[in-house]
Each structure stands twice: as C-alpha cells, then as structure tokens.
Amino acid sequence: MLRPAHFRRPEREAGRREDEEMNHSGTIRLETKRLVLRPFVITDAQAMYRNWANDPQVTRFLTWTPHENVKETEQILSEWIAQYQNPDYYCWAIAFREDEGNVIGNICVVKQDPSVDSVTIGYCLGRRWWGQGLMPEAFSEVIRFFFETEKAGRIQANHDTNNPNSGRVMEKCGLRQEGILRRSGRNCQGICDECLHGMVAEDYGELIKRRGE
Image (cartoon, helix red, strand yellow):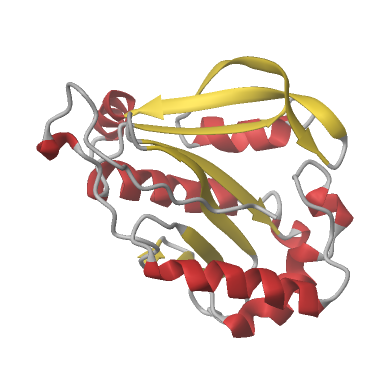
C-alpha cells in the first residue's frame, strides 16, 4: 500500500532554532470546492476495496498489488487508523462533499525528513474518477495545508517515468520537475526510474502571488 510515515526528531539539529521547526497537526479534516479530505474510519473498507484497492489498473505503477478481498483492506485500514494518535502522521481519505461515506482515493505523507522539514506525498484515485481534475484539487489543498499550517520547508513527490499522467498532476499543483532518479524505485512493474518533482516554501509564496491570493 501507500505507506504513510511518521518520524520523530530525536533532538534539535545543529544550526536550527526552535521557531524553525515544522508544526504537526496530524490528519485533520480539509475541504475543497468538491472534496473532503478526512481521516479514514474502518467502515471505509468496503468503498476503498470496491473503488480502487482491488483494481490492477490503479495499482499498476504503485508499490502494492491489488487487494484479494475486503478483509485485506480492513487490515490495512486498522493499521492506518491506529496511527492517527500520532500528530506527525498524515493519511487522508478522499470523498465528495455530498457523499463523504464513499471514499474514492487517498493521499498521504509517505516519507518525512524532519531535518529539513520535507514531506513526500503519495496518492491514488479510483479509475472511475480519473480525468476530472480531482487529484490536483486534493493535492493542492494538501500543499496549502503543509506550507501554511504545518510550515513545511519542502514538498516533493515522484512517479514512474512510464506514468507521465501522475507527473502532470504534480505539475498542475505547481511542483517542478527536478530530475530523473535512475533505478531508484520498485513497483508492480519491477525496478523503475523515478521522476522527482518538488516545491519549496519560497516557490509556494510566488505561486500564491501569481494567483493573486
């Protein structure tokens, strides 16, 4: 699965002031024009399994194989839900505002580097909802949250170079392509080259200015 991550800083790094540290609010509810991003609950298992977790087309470029049954989905959700007590754990279910009980995807922090306040984002969306601008909408809200609320210094994401559609999602959200990491990942297709996209806090500030916000 996407494996949401949390890492605690054992001690303050050299050259770092306390007021520079990233905030941690955890997986709080976020909303966009069409979507709700919220914590998972165990009753989401049926919709998660039905809408994306059992679909080999969704998992083709991901690090996990399709779930064999809803029990497998329930087990994964139980592990995620148990982590919500940690304030540095971020894993959102994605649903439409008018139908919050029918989750259609998820977006999570899959890696953190506390020394530079960096988070790596992973996401997936049910195939039925591809091509509707929903993932850029969700990812843009997560970006806003991390820069404005959590005071992150950097947000990044990567994708298999054979999956350019995921890269277009990142670019629509304002992330810049920073390079190709050769043989750096493994997914359902095997070992792959990954395209790295990133945005730093200064980039986000400029993006907001251009949008006139």
